[in-house]
Length: 125
Image 1: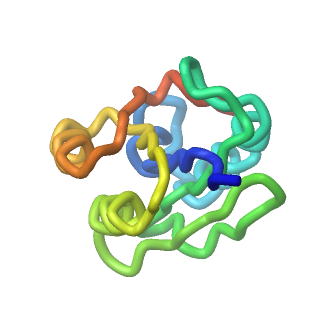
Image 2 (image 1 turned 180 degrees about the horizontal axis):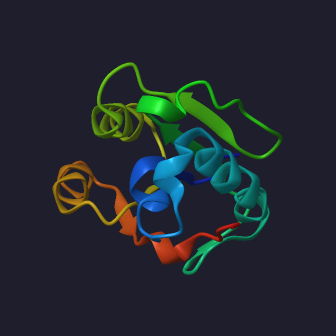
């Protein structure tokens, strides 16, 4: 049996895609995003049927957000983009990166990942 597809969520980019005051509490905004992601693990994304493995990559003030069932959280030691590229590079399976960051999109598609925009994942306010 092969591993399920890997869905890597660019936490900073997805949180920043909606001007809902996230900048006042970056840690809390990352936790709210994490808490909205478990249904993705079961159902997948548009065009990517579940189950999938979901990894949320956080950086900066959001470091330290913990994993929950269905969502593994990776606190980037430096650039979240670099950690996302490394996750895709190391994965021996289909990968989808959720981000609107043009540079990151180019980097991950160059190594075989698909990309989806921030609206592909649910958000909690």
